[in-house]
Length: 177
Image (tube, rainbow, N blue to C red):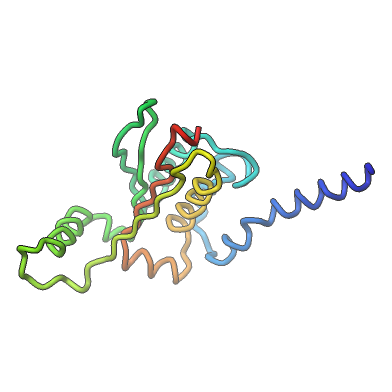
């Protein structure tokens, strides 16, 4: 029985150790100056439940370390937790974020008859964890944020050039915590 428990324990450790490798390896190489979620938190994604304040702290760290990311606080919850979005894009797009927003708003205004700029970056909103019993989605948001902010893979670079990505890691932090 002890051998079976030991074998299962080793299997679980091996699976959890490689669980995020398939995702991270796909988008290598990464900028070494940007902390991985694991390095920042002190444990691997999925090994334990990450509190909302640590999620916000990690995204704040990414925004400080990467020229591709900007953290925006857009409100507070009923219990006073920060509501944040990490905006990730190319440095050029981030520098003209207000212009991009203005042009997108013009494009949906029915009274505006001018042609929409086809070179305008797409706006992508990734919203995670609306229900308290969905802990894995905010953990996935951390991996997504790291990948977009740190990867030098050509596919990721193309996303950043052609889109502005808003990552809301936890829509309902009160329910999560």
